[in-house]
Length: 73
Image (cartoon, rainbow, N blue to C red; front, side, top):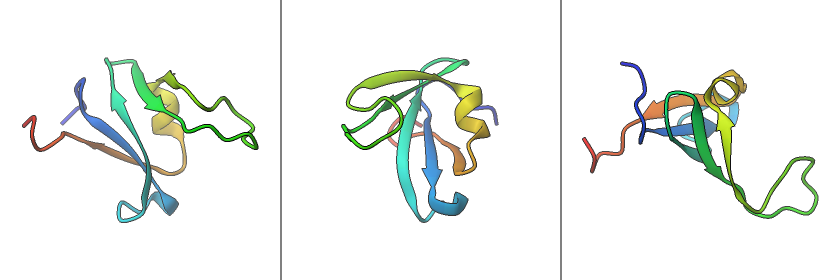
């Protein structure tokens, strides 16, 4: 089934869905909303909520997939 807005998107260490470390929310068919904690040592933008292209999330090596929140099903 194709992911739908409101579904959660997950990253897991080594693509392991038992080692999830980051979650985003599918906003629409093109974008994920993610919240990043502030990290002064990061090489990317942190400390805010951002939109990222869905295709970039899916291309990331640790992307595990989408799941609907059980309370919304």
